[in-house]
Structure formats: structure tokens, C-alpha cells
Length: 224
Length: 189
Image (cartoon, rainbow over all chains, first blue to last red; front, side, top):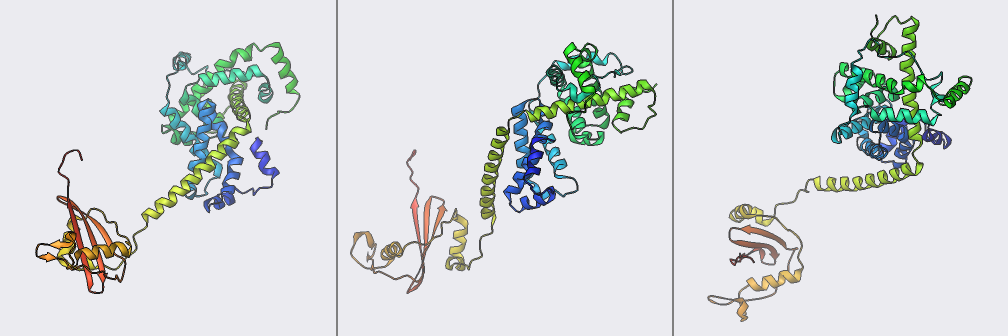
């Protein structure tokens, strides 16, 4: 559970988002603040995952909450408040990417990766038996960060939407304004590239990492 | 042979496949593993942001929402229809009203102090010897008048100058004063 989630439960704030939304609509700023407290880190994780830049991600989160407040009346309650909020965050993050599009050398690398064909795309190998434990290792985390940084923006956006929010291909296609086939292709290449960039860690882990992972296999995951 | 793109759809719950062989199972596990790593890294990155940043963010949001509320209230005030009012004496009169409509630029209707109006009334009444109140046939009789209601003052854009229209209600009834000042013809002034 994230920090914000802990705080919300500790202070016995109303648990129902819907109730908070209703109060916020009537001008109760404190109710809106509780919604902010609950979801700001989760919204940030999403924005940062897509943008890979702290200040940009913070700006997007701030804009998203302002927009959410402005359009609270349009929130129909068919989905959860967070589902509605993450769509706003995602749209703003994608807009931000479009406005600040940078040409990244990684696009060339991806072409090379595609030359290998799709038949042997995914390698049936993983990093130890416990991804949570693996993340404790600074080296692995920095390698994953670098691999994410090096993905093209579109590939990364799709990967983050899928892995952080579990969006369906259809939902992602709608969010990114492209076809389901394009989403599938982007997700496929994003995952394949991630795996290729991490494969030497998987195949040749350092002795420290091996020891770390071995210790981790007998204990439960540290992350929820 | 199952293509990996189909395998990925299967792993994401978008396609149902028979994926029982160990090789396929291992690939599916690898796909999930990447997901775990991406999720974990992103959540750790979010947790690494100092709480003070978000506290500052809330302060900023709170301030912006306050500003928005103020400007929304102002816009609402501006959007309110003007209250209906009884037609003025000027509007009731035919030619003057039409002339008014033709040259009306903007209207600054308001109450003018009785003292100012009295001064204007002194100007338009006949009599007196003040050269400022003389007309071609002799002096204008200038006498103070008392007003029944505040004066309506309106400004007019006329073809060759600026005008002011004053509507007065005094003991003699309704009086309209139209004061036109010709535009200055000197360039640059």
C-alpha cells in the first residue's frame, strides 16, 4: 500500500470516494483534499512511468487534479473515481508527450530488434524467482529504469498503462487514439525490448545478486 | 507453432489459447515477470518523491481552485441579464429616441448630484446677465430648480464630436439637455 493509502485509513476519513466526490461537488474543499491524498502517488506513478521525468510528472498530476475538480459534475460514477482520474492523468501525459516530442535514438535500436522476427521474441527466462526481491537490488532497479528510459515514448506509455493500470487493448487504443493492432504491436515490442535489455542481468547476475535472490526465494514478496 | 504475439495476448487475457507446454508456460511467466518489474519500479519511484512536494502541490491546487472560483463568480455576475427597467422618458419620445439609438456609443447612466444638475439647469433657463448665459436675443433667465429624481446622464458618439445627454425631471416636467462638443481637428491631439 502506498503512503497516501496508509494515511487515509489512519485518520478514519470516509472510505467511500463517491461520498467525497458528492461533497467536493458542493464545494467541500476538504473532501477533495482527501481524494488528492488518496490518489496523488498512484497518479504520479502513472505519469512518471509514461514521462520518466519527475517535474513533468508532478505538473501532469497537478493539472489532472485541477481538471478533475473542474469537471466533477461530469463524473457519472459508473466507474471509480480513480479510474476516471487515471484517464485524465493518462490523457494529459500523452498530450505532454505529443507537445514535447523528442527524437530518441532508441527508435533505431527497436528496428534492429525487430529484425530477429517474432518467433523467438520472448525468452523463457526470468530474473530469479521473486521480482519483488529483485527490486531491492539497486543495480537491477537502475537497469530497469534505464531500460524504461530507452523505450520509445509510445511503447513505454502502452507498457505502463497495461502493467500499472491493467488496461485492456481496447481501452489503451481509445486512450492513445490508435488501433488495437497498433497497441498490440507496441506492447509486444516494449516487452521484448525490456527483456532484451535486461537479459544479461538474467543470464549473468552478479554474485551479490545471486545471493540476494537466493535469500528472497525463501521469503515472501516484500511488495504488495 | 504459437506466435509470441498470440502468447502475449493470452497472457494479457485477450485471447484464449492452449498453452500447456513448458516452453509456452515459461514464456508467459517471463511476460508476467516483466510486468512485475515495471510495476515495482514505478511504485518505488513514486514512493521516492518527498511528501513535501505533494504538500506544496496541494497548496498550489488549493490556491488555483480559489482563483478559479473567484473568476467563475465574476463571469456569472457579468453573464446575468440586466434587470428590466421602465422605459426612460427619452425612450418614450420618438425622434429623440431614434437619434439616440443611431448615435449611442456607450451609456454611462448614473445618478449625478443635485448640485451639478442645478448648475446645468441654470445654464439652459432664460434670463440673467452673465455673458456665459447669453443667447443671440438677450440674456437667458437663470433660476435654480429642484429635481424630482436623479438625472440620467448618457454619452453619445456623434459624427463630428462627442455628446452628453442629460435627462432632468424638475417641477416643470421633463427636460433633455444635449451637449455636443466638436472633435478637435488638430492632428496629434
